[in-house]
Image 1: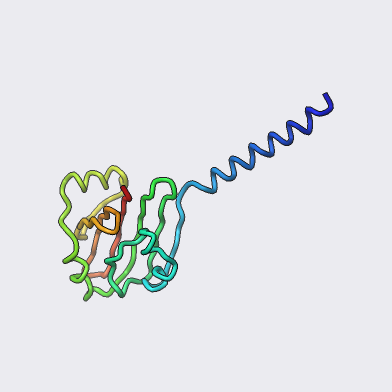
Image 2: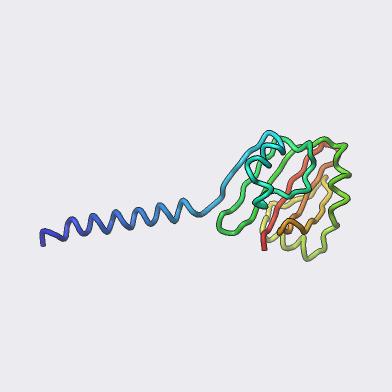
Length: 143
């Protein structure tokens, strides 16, 4: 009976370690970059967390991605003059594409912004762009 105490402590310790490992491997990873160059150096574009078609003037970039689902949310500012260089690479989303993003991101509200869809870089991305303010918000799904 004297050995039961250490065995319980050992099992409890192993269970606690397993829970900590599982917890640390799930959830959202948040990154912030001052410039697009910073994001490129960190590998955010190469790994597919940010689309490769972002304006070169992108700045104040906030990105979070889910390690379990590969879903990505990002927002940034850019020089409004560059908007057309991005928009020509995008498509108008279908109702089905919009519905998919609304289900995934219930707060999706395009008020005052133009909605676009991009499929490339191994992702499907919905963009909300305010050309006048030079603001871009996006949601990517990695199928």
